[in-house]
Length: 96
Image (cartoon, rainbow, N blue to C red; front, side, top):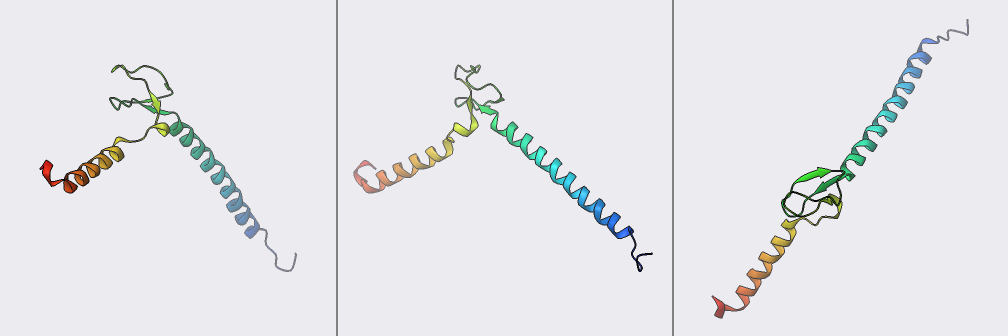
């Protein structure tokens, strides 16, 4: 009718385009909900107990929960303290 034109490829292409838009929309919603969940995580700095949506509440150990984004992890401080102790003991052999 239109010199051999078939609407079938347009149907396949349209389905792929619509499916891609739906997939992108669902993916965006999932990423947003995961980000919201991760930003609401809290931790007790003293005992390490994790929580969610309880920023500022008291923990059983007596400390209060803090958002995980505000916590500086102790591993960094321990490594720094150990390195400083090694440097101090190496520079002063009288202490050994």
